[in-house]
Length: 383
Ligand SMILES: [Ca+2]
Ligand SMILES: [Ca+2]
Image 1 (cartoon, rainbow, N blue to C red):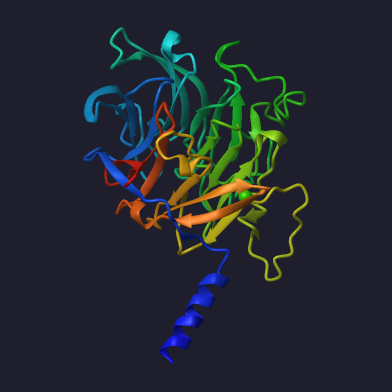
Image 2: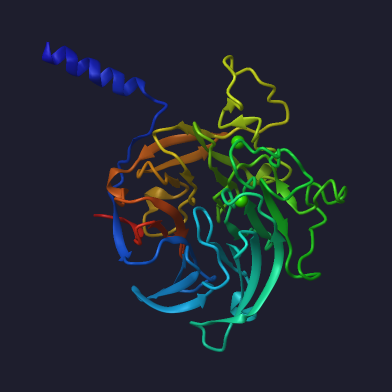
């Protein structure tokens, strides 16, 4: 009887090909730093050995040679910090070495989004707070769903993630409206007209006007808290936070435009399911692009999108995308192949014992994760 139960359990385990399997590369978390104040983002200028950590309360701290050192920038007087508000994202200009420019995404003292550029001072470890140039102010109707991610894409343009504005269920229909910047991924260029130029090949650039915003790159997003580009392929990965039931990861390959003009479905879809929920799940999906992966609550509550590993220290991970969930506490991965999420894994040794707020990658492509409890960890091979 014991044997047959064991065989049955083994068969059940083998038949479960849809869920994540346990990872087989020996990985571990190396503690880089602890004691940070609610770290939300990690960014690095090209070729730089320092790590820049964004704290929710409004500071950017530098980790240099493994030590938490100087405060690079203090925006505590300009940032609102309730709930999902705060200093949310940081990206360094690809030409940072020559122009000293970086961009931040935060909610201001009125709770509205500010995308602002700053410049470093004569001291490379200190930014000049007086250099703020507001690139894009966006009114926020509710205090939640503010997005937060910034990234310079493979094309050198700045991509900005904005949530649907907040409340629940997207009451103003922002995700499906191209008249608003809310619920979108935006693409702008900082090297032409001030404060930015809309690239002529943005999907709505030709039709731009009050009813159609030319800055839009992708739409139908609820709260794309973290998105990234695969630094080898240019493929776009978006972790879009769900409403109350389904969390999702979207992938749009570079070969099909890396998100250009893609409608990711919110608020007509939540993950792969109709929204509002429909008993037959038979809503019209015309024109919508679904996720490559979704998972249900309470397996998690808020997806934390990550990065594709392109470092050199762990060759077995080449091309593997890592992600987490703020409530789930786990770290999982997959490989994007033939339009789907293959080789799904869960990595028990990478559970940091806290809420994963973000991942980050250093100049050489090694991956890190951050926890709300103040930890900065590097993913390493354990033997
Ligand atoms: Ca909001
Ligand atoms: Ca979606």
